[in-house]
Picture (cartoon, rainbow, N blue to C red):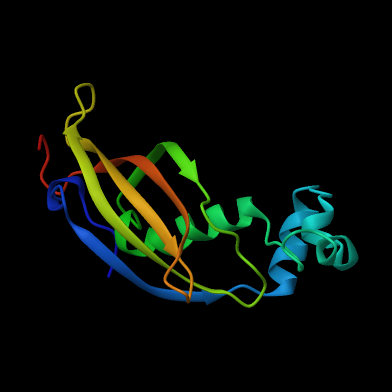
Length: 152
C-alpha cells in the first residue's frame, strides 16, 4: 500500500504496518558510529554488561528512526510535501540486540492547510512494539500532504 493523500485520511484511522524488523548488532554499531555517538552502553559490551541492563542497549535515536522509517510506506510515501515535526517522543522500554520490532500508527488530528490549497496536515501517533508486546517508542508526527482533489 502506498501513502494516502490528505483527503483519504480520517481521525482514528489505524494501521498495523506489515514490516517487522529484528535489530542486529551491526545496525546499532553502524548507527552509533555514523552519528558519532560514543555512549559505552551502545558500543562497549563490557561497559554494557556492567550496567543495570547487563547487555548492549540499542541507540534510542536508531529506534526512533526505525519507527518512522517503517511507517512511511503506508502513511506518506508519494504524498508527502514535508514532515513538520515530531512531538512527545518517548522511549518507555529499552531495545536490545535481537529484539523484533513492529509499528502501529493512528491518525489523531487532521486540518486543511490555510495557506496551501490542495494540501493538509495529518498528525499520527506512531508506536513501536517489541516481540514481548511492550511499547518501546512512541511519538506524534505531523506532516503536510497533498490532497487527491485540488482545493480539498
